[in-house]
Image (cartoon, rainbow, N blue to C red; front, side, top):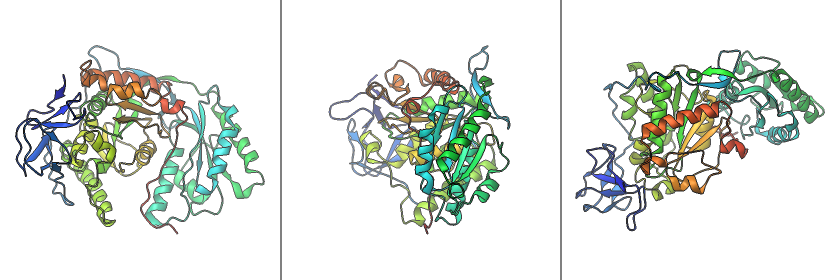
Length: 482
């Protein structure tokens, strides 16, 4: 198969293989399209023709514009979502080897995390992680620092957001122990941090205020050793996949993202939800133009109203800074065949599968309802992947048509939309969904294969970003820096 018409009502097809000068992932007209007529893909308008387009002609930025504006009128018109998909008829639900935590959650890693309260101690945190790698081994699977530039000179919502995200990381089930590293004079004071963090096991969560000690490196090494000692008897045990929370994200997308990798992740999401697990969909600006596809699957009017607020608030964030909501896709997206934000968004939401949307949560808020969740967050890869981790995602599924080496604090599984990328970047890509475009698998078959792969990762298999040591955080910021 060299091309695909995704929906019967589409007036464009997507090339699975190059045709003449038109690359794979790009669109061709299936019939004559008049100037001013809607371009239909996924059965949904993705733009307006700016000139007459002949049948077979390339359809892209040179002859299509977005139809998006700043305002939208959302109506609650519920369409029942599928409750989930059976894993396999007559088969036992899969389990993973997890670390059971005191609060009833389970981790898929047993690591020590060093979390700075302020950017001033970033270098100290990084050096402590490097100097104490001898602690890694046995039950301690890793020791990582997460530098960032905030925690001081912030006000209002930004200050609260930094505090919320950092304390959420300290509660993450993949962290068997945490060293909270403070300077001592920052806005985010140790006392404030402790209050926001709430009850914590003092054997596993330690605080070090660098201004209060003579040698922060010696004191830090001592505290890290104490944390490792508290973790020494931790063991993996069979754990139902219903305890898994999986974040879903895309970046470096191309014209195949909405045909291969994102639908495969959608099938995975339906499978995990059917097994009692949870998934989280974010990057709100990349839902603009396709949000009704999710809104109409809201499990209740309450969830619909929360979802509308998440999207509307993000649009106001754009306009309050004098930006249009449709300043997207990126140059790389366009080179890959994505023409408008609606085109990108319709592909993006494929990751949500067909299950009901059970909740719409704020940036870095915890997942509390089992099933498919929406979360407020930007499209930026590291910012949104960090927020997914803070929300409790054990791992992040990241689909890409062009590739990227980054990694979130949680294991980050890179899923290629096309086989050439999988072959070109074996050190980046963990899972190939290009098999769908190659005709080797259906999205359903690849989704089941992805679930099996996720169970392996949850049981300890390292992702390529983990092997490369790619771990980082980025915190969403909007306001004043003092």
